[in-house]
Length: 227
Image (cartoon, rainbow, N blue to C red):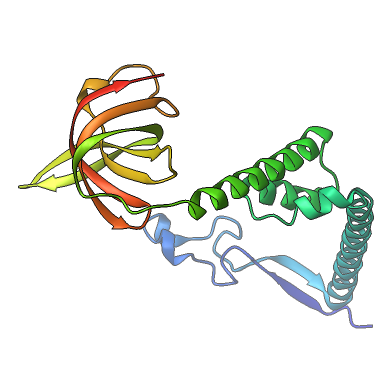
């Protein structure tokens, strides 16, 4: 076996002795190799042995990784014996997706997470049924000015550019008792530190329909909470 001396190439500069990105510091001289481009000398035999050691370590890592993955898959299989949970984890929901990712990565989830997943799915099923009933009884929204009463589903701030000036306006989505929904400006008379969402409100405004069951309103007046 050859014992010929072979230079050890500096990995930092790639054997060039300089690093162009640091040209402003001593002309870019590589401090790892002192500008020589190599870190000393070795033999072909030692290079071969080092390559074998690296390959052995690589195979050991792969084996360990494969064993770990096999263990995780077995744990996941055990967790998914709960058929209700397995079905629930297939539901597309950002929290469920995160928990499902953790299960597949680590092979386990807590009892609290399992309970949460099942709860989210049950609530979603309930909401879907309620939404289906609401959609089935939608009616046309009459155009004109009149008083309505309903529940505030959401209140959000929207920005608009008027003559080069950016202004923020609060808007609210209100669901009427017949399932119809209307969207428009949040009445200034209702401003307070208390949350308006889910509260019942009545007001007079000018309404227009966008589609069956959904419309817009403007210039709300005589607004008040009735809950």
